Length: 321
Image (cartoon, rainbow, N blue to C red; front, side, top):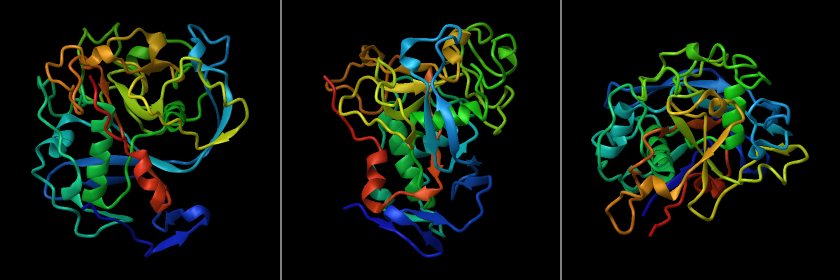
């Protein structure tokens, strides 16, 4: 039986059961015990921003609107899409010892489901982990939480866009047009149809790499083809959970896409065809066969959710046909 305990020692208790660590809100390296691997994490100060794209933005799609005000709380985010050599620690489970000094959450690491092996291993060290399901990405976050004591999850769609923009209201975090995109992103025009090592291109103002291109990134939210019909007024820390497996949102575009699909407000979504060639019945919970353009990065909210809310941000498994 899994253990989930919230430790309030050394923390400030807030309303609604949230806590904020007294530790400084700064960048840090999450060093993975018993390995030589680490994940660099940077702070994103919360605030108010306009989510979505205006109607006059070039190559805008209907699902990107209406533009609406969103207020977000502070969070940390990884500077890179999670690379294969870090993700494989979760897959092979050969570094399961938890940290000696636990953080805010104590979670029994043995109680976390282990991933199966990939059908075809496209991955290389330093390159984003790909072809993984949203559930698998979320379970990595759960495993990382157990290993480090820090609460990790996938970003919400709003958090992802806010971090990508890094204060910019333009179509891309570097400007209004795609003329400079080759300096910031791997996309259809410069990728040679292949995935590339993370962190090679120029970062945004927060120090985040590959927010535009290389691989599209999982977020928690379900996809609505009509955009944000219920968000015409200001919302705080929005999240749209989905009961159905498809479609779920991916953000940022990939090395296979033209610049328009890499814009800060552009939205992609998962499809059943990503598992069409899976020979298993039911289909794998862990791997796609045809989503070699999809990966993920992680966030850590500064305010720890109430204990009753922790698990809802980790995706539940849904069996397929």
